[in-house]
Amino acid sequence: MSSYARFAALMAIAVTCFLPVASATAATSGAFDDPIGDSLEYAPDLGATSVTIGDDETISVDTRIVPRPPAGWGGYAYCVGFPPFQTCVPADMTVTWYVDHTPGAGNVADDGADAKVVAIPRQGQTTWEGSRWDAANGKFAAGAQPLGTEDPGGARWTLRLPDLGVPRPSTMRVWVTSLYKSYNGLGVLLDYSDKAGPGTVAVDGPPASSVGGPAASPSCLSKTKTVNRLGDRIRTLRRQAKNGRAGAKRKLRRARDIRKRAVKAMKRKCGPPDTNAAPPPTAAPPGCKLVTKPVLQQEGVGIHAEWVVKPEVVVEC
Ligand SMILES: [Ca+2]
Ligand SMILES: [Ca+2]
Image 1: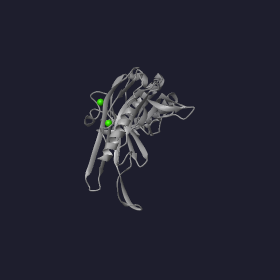
Image 2 (image 1 turned 90 degrees about the vertical axis):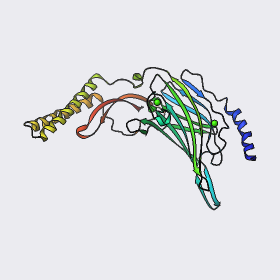
Image 3 (image 1 turned 30 degrees about the vertical axis):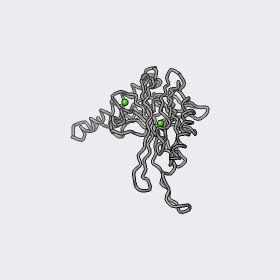
Image 4 (image 1 turned 180 degrees about the vertical axis):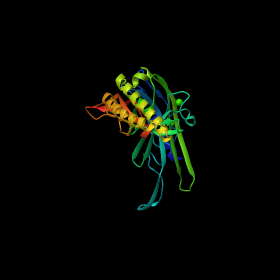
């Protein structure tokens, strides 16, 4: 019990230290609070959270956190034996920020969350993951990696709004959950958590269409349409040739030649296609900047290939 008394004293100091951390009062920011002291062991104790939407399309979220024993921030759950013959078991610990920006969409089991950011502290290092709800597959799919940092009193991450699929304007709900799970030395499952929020943050306009960046040129879009139309024709002719329809083979050869030339013309108008499957960059090196540009992309392969022009974040130096 004496250790709890010490925690209570620490907690009082923590409350005094952490409560003044409030959000800036810019138009697009918000904050919500959670008491320090409602999680005294195992799960990291969440405090105040502030959310800031930058003019540069970034969202930054800062949460004050007090790590708790026995594992602190990603340490060991327990050790067996004595050094040097000691075996230590790492704790299974996460802090998850949920973002619900679109009503009626998102994961029902997570209260409608459309995106989330997870920090996984483990033995002195924190792994950061970002993901968005993929309705077609019924699961969160990995997205752009957040730029996460920690300080002695909490954790902070930054992402671009489009990386989380946040439309402008919209009203976001944000909440944080810290979880701790592990078995103790006797094989009993320890399952602890702390929850902060939700808080709401208004994301001001411009409308989503201008977030996508400049539109592709009309001639690029028209060339793309031509190539896709020829693709449709080739698929039809291929079926007809397979069924032995008279003249289909000759027409198919001709359509393929025309499509080849049309693809060349499309690439001239739209610029080189993006063949890089890597996630979009989240930060630009010094002297460069992130810009949103219409980029030619191929969806599907072989005879099912379709060309689309999509806004994409690229590094421009
Ligand atoms: Ca708390
Ligand atoms: Ca939602």
